[in-house]
Structures are given as C-alpha cells and as structure tokens.
Image (cartoon, rainbow, N blue to C red; front, side):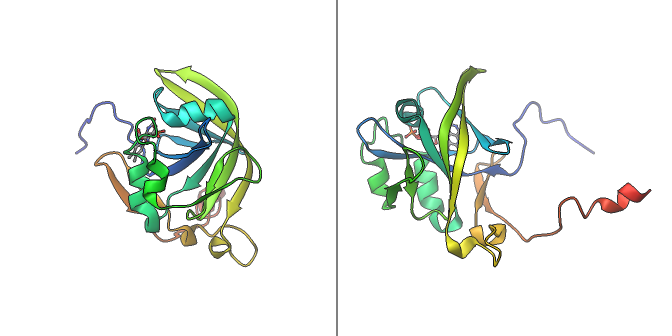
Length: 190
Ligand SMILES: Cc1cc2nc3c(=O)[nH]c(=O)nc-3n(C[C@H](O)[C@H](O)[C@H](O)COP(=O)(O)O)c2cc1C
C-alpha cells in the first residue's frame, strides 16, 4: 500500500557539496549545498538562497570550488551549513580546516577534502525565488589516496557523505554493487 506524501523534493541521496569562495576582502568562506548537481559533462549547478555570503563572493570573484564532504569532516561540513559568513567573520578559521588558492580559479581549495572541482562562474539566473549558479568545471583536484592504479577516482575511497532531506540526516556511501551500462544489459537481448 503506497501513501501520498504531497509535494517533496524526494530525491535521495542528495550530495553534500562544500562550496568555497573568497570574499572581496580575501576571506575564505565555505558553504554546505545539497541542492546542486552536475548538469552537463563540465558544468555544476548550485541553487542558492539570495542572501548567502557565498553568492556575494561568487559575484565578486566569478569563481568557486566545490568539494565533496567526507565522513572525517562531517562536523565541519555541517557547521558550514549552519553559520553564515555574513555574520560570523571567522567562520572558516573556527572550523580549523586549511585552504590554499586554487591554481586554476580565483577561489580557495580546502586541503582536508579529498576531491575538489575548480569552477569558473558560467551563468547566474534567478529561478523560482532562488539563484541558480552554474560553474564550468575547469579542473578537478583529487588526493592521490582516493585514486586507483589507473589514476581514476575510486568512489569507495572518498568516504563521501550524503544528505537525506526526509529526516535531515547524513549517510555514508555503501558498497559498489554493479557496473553501469552492464548490469541491465540482459533486457536488451529480449
Ligand atoms: C545539509 C545542508 C544543505 C544545505 N543546502 C543548501 C542549498 O542547497 N542552498 C542554500 O542556499 N543553502 C543551503 N544550506 C544552508 C547554507 O549552507 C547556510 O545558510 C550557510 O550558513 C550559508 O553560508 P554563507 O552565508 O556563509 O554562504 C544547506 C545547509 C545544510 C546543513
């Protein structure tokens, strides 16, 4: 028996994206974004409320980075989604994490997160009362420890966390269970 739950953004999992920017004053800010995702092979879209400090910073610097939050830094990731750089001037310092300037874009790379997309601002659009920011991914930086022998990212080594918007909790990723474009192939033969 299925129950109607009404209109919900019922996708699971949602990502836990760590969007890092510089303010006009050069200060690092990092924000937690779950309402975002890849939209073409080299673009990532973020849905931001208009008042976010991160949005002001993106407008000022035309760039941002997006890291995947990992289990080891879940508390810091959650804090980045709780405090705003608009009011907490030492937000990033309080987290105890470290950042260096990206070698590709005018934005910080948080050293502790294992994988980071370095993005140039490609588009900003107001849509349904929020701001949709699209970044062009010009480079991905990954810690060697999350790569396989062929230099590709091994998702199992990321220890990425996921957001559950039904109950506002975080999940860890599970086991690899199948090869995409292969496990469904038997239905092609009928
Ligand atoms: C799990 C989680 C997901 C979030 N996702 C978004 C989001 O997609 N868009 C958004 O505007 N705010 C989102 N937030 C809220 C911001 O991260 C939060 O308001 C933060 O303080 C903004 O920081 P800033 O003002 O320094 O940019 C999320 C918060 C949490 C905890």
